[in-house]
Image: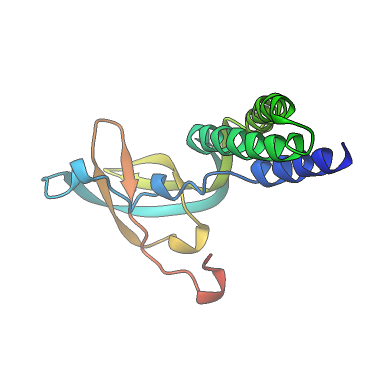
Length: 169
């Protein structure tokens, strides 16, 4: 019983760490349907850049955690139950699978990732755009390219590079 509890505890700890990085939402990331297409672009002057958090979907990781948790729980339960007999192994495998899937369901539906709120001027007006990214990627007072992929979607492209020590591996 102690071993089974420890296995489930370790499983839930491993699964709870699953979260999306949000990289797929950065302004300089495009999906394949946006490649080789003409898109409206213009230059804007960045006025301010401030840190913010962006809430992104973590559903894919949650689904993966539930599936992996269920499989590991079933295998662990069956292995522990096999010390008794076949019937116990099957029941323990089913119970372990359910417990593992339940542990996986504890992963959050959303995740907060680092973002920026960019204030920029365009045609004499001031606008803002919240984007996934880091402050060091944008320089206030400088010009940057803004790509519009759909109506009201602004993708202000980074106009600076972060120092190597600020990059995440």
